Image 1 (tube, helix red, strand yellow):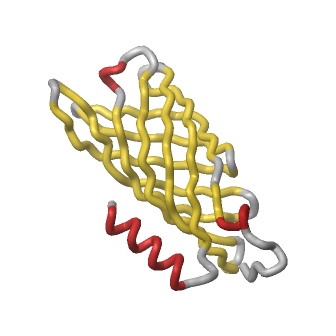
Image 2 (cartoon, helix red, strand yellow):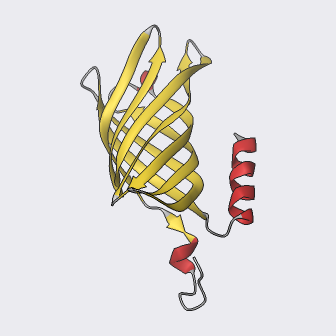
Length: 160
């Protein structure tokens, strides 16, 4: 994960058309057992504007977070993911692949995790984790607040 973050930082410093960002978020969802879960996440990544037909840009980020199952703390887990997505019109859509760190029998198990998302500030999101030979699937909404250098940029001298 550290290597991925270093690559993101190098790419963003080499190419002035790449926009680095930090994006905290909150997720509220329901899982396959019809239980409510809440999660927090923080993503650090880059956005690259492009002009390729209907594709206006792409993103790549590293995400870290924690999911809480509101009525069963034994199903809580930390997670890390590498996420990639495209911007078309006003909609971002993409996927993530990574790992979840599930506690079971006082041991931490590393299990596969994936996600799908689509939206703009408010996203529809699905997270999929596989452990104990079952899929734990959350489907819900995700609110994010991307923080970029554009928020703080001098608009008169900005060449982005």
